[in-house]
Image (cartoon, rainbow, N blue to C red; front, side, top):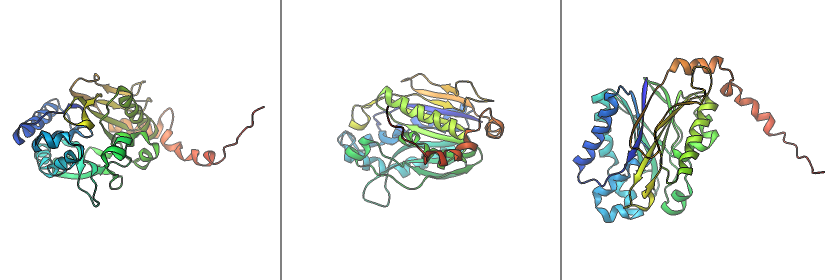
Length: 292
């Protein structure tokens, strides 16, 4: 299986056709390179706010709802493209209507036969909770697909090991991200790599890149696509299957061997996933040693 991780710039969209054509071009390029699984980034859907006009796009609150109101139409395009090219697509996440009065940050997974399901972000960053008032959504999900068992940890979620462990049955963890600073990119990348090590799986990180000065939340974006595995038998010694150039738009491709994942879980040089439970009794028996 071949995966494609996006480094995706946001545009000021001139029309709905502009968006549809852009998405078609991106999907067509990745599928043309043989990709089976395409991963778009966190908050990549925010460019939809520009279709409501620049006043709405530049307003933090109005931009949330402008995107949420168009998400179903965007999903229809993703479903069509997934069917047309016979690929699986994690659509760029964006604010979505939910049960309460505030939006959630939602990514949606499509296969050749249509929508497989969605994943909401679990833990909000300071900006999301203090400035934007985006709230946590529904539970973590494990998607059974033709490509294998897939989980999704949206950006900040990848930095929390217990969320990753809850998806320990996943063979592939998708990590769509949106980070302003280089430090943010590396926090998420380190999280993605750590989850791949702990779960002995493959993680696929996508990023928003470039400037979108028309919205305070998306002004500056630093990132790259990347695909990571456990640094163990059957994988690169670094754990890096592929890494894109920071800030450069485009796809980063890597081959994923499900047999290698199964083998490293069964008979790796180390067995982090199997030995996880051995931590439990030890973390409850910490001894404080007084200074001399």
